[in-house]
Length: 513
Image 1 (tube, rainbow, N blue to C red):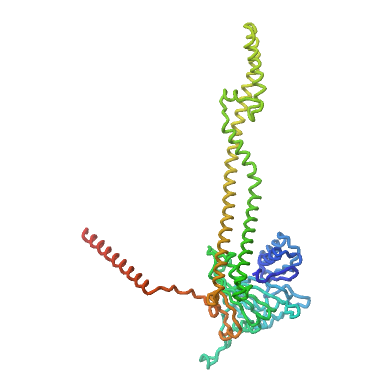
Image 2 (cartoon, one colour; image 1 turned 45 degrees about the vertical axis):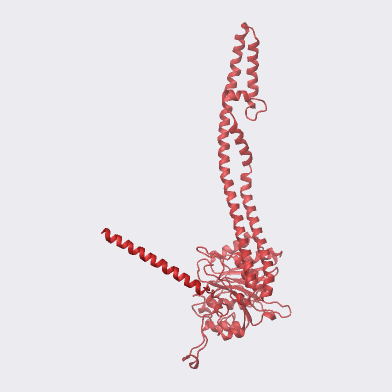
């Protein structure tokens, strides 16, 4: 939606059903991505649910958005973004995902007249507020400025019912009975005749939390370019998506199938030129997101795993140590990483032992008595050191094991991110090749998108149901008669064999009985 609206720094944007502010944040990301100054955005939102409204305010603060104006209240009954003379404010862009087919939308507050003048195309049914939202959007979009070539644009998610609900007026001559035109038909016809609808995108079902109703995107434009006047681009985007539970997902490759026809506005030559550009751009974005996620993982795990290599080296050294008494004695040197504290004690013992060996028989006894204390000190120190080394071995082994698990966890997360990016890139390349195929044939392209003029829409009684204009039916598989005959023969033979086997089985059971 944001890629279609293309907001830039300095524009005013409103979401009359802002929820937690997600769509406004997408506008901010778009401006940042294109090098714009988000401080120049004029963001407006209104939300009826108090808790969700507070979340939207927190969202803006956490994302460092300095300028925004959020209001709490029912947008249809009590719009809060108004001028000093109590008229609806007008905005450059409106982006919305309001509740589908809202039953209690505020009919009672406007049935006697709407002080904001929103319902100029007709009064929506009391039990369905879809066209109330649509008319509020139109009323709060800036009027076209032919000299500047500007005007308000709105992008809204709606239930597909807005495209076809309601019947035209019927007379006895036409239908055998008199029947007034339904309200939603009248409003939709008014929108079409006023040339307010620029594009419609039909979406797959199960895209939205708590709502399995298939939706559509409607682009409203008060300043259509001259070459788009009295035309509506219709895009059938419900074929390609990733199935999920409880929700389906539109991948970047699926979004490309929408954005390319939109930016080409149905022109096949332009679409073919745009495909490689979009493919390259979306692949770059996938790679950037991959690298950002990998950096986040490294930031989280890197400092913790930093000692692992050193501890693994230390563990290998500890594993190689021989802690037997003689082995320790033979290994003691002032340079030994673990036994060096014993070197001076062992030197004292060896010095006295050398004196004893060199002394005469009469002096040996006296020297041996001098050996008792140094030897005891050495034995006690050796035991303490060996116990400390064993404790350190356990500590290092446990740390290496724990950090090894963390390293495996990090590697698994990194691999998951890399594989997900590879899948996205593969989908993008497949979609790109498929789009080039689609855009090389008018017949094939019409299965996905088409540009429809007002005359054709009028001939279809202002019904915007896309299957009237886009060939949404899947082509039937062609089977040659010879192949069909062979398959039929094979199936008959298999059935006969199964029948014979069953007959034999029943016979054997009967014989056994």
